[in-house]
Image (cartoon, rainbow, N blue to C red; front, side, top):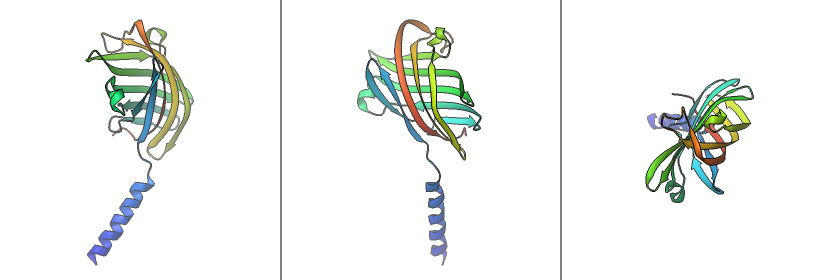
Length: 168
């Protein structure tokens, strides 16, 4: 009798888990005419807010050995109010001659001038499904992106299509 109840409870729990959406997705980057795939880093990515206001944090890591040989992490953060986008920030950690180099971009022109386009956004329960594109110039910084050196900019464009869980 106890086994039957346990089996029913396990089936109900698995139905609940499969019924909810799962954090997933990918960011693709175009750098120097080469496309790189960065799967979502689920444990570091999240969102907060509501349908009308969202704060989005997307973290992604390289998905294959070739990309891992050139890059380590990518982050994209921004806020939406309705269909308006605010406060965009991007970081990209790359490897240059075996050394880590962090690149930064922000919304203002002197920070790289991120052009961020929201293609879709929907909230389902506690999860956010969001997709869009971006283009920017990225540069190094001695103060974590407050001042971005664009004297030797890296042109980056990309696309994101992710499902995020809430801030925990």
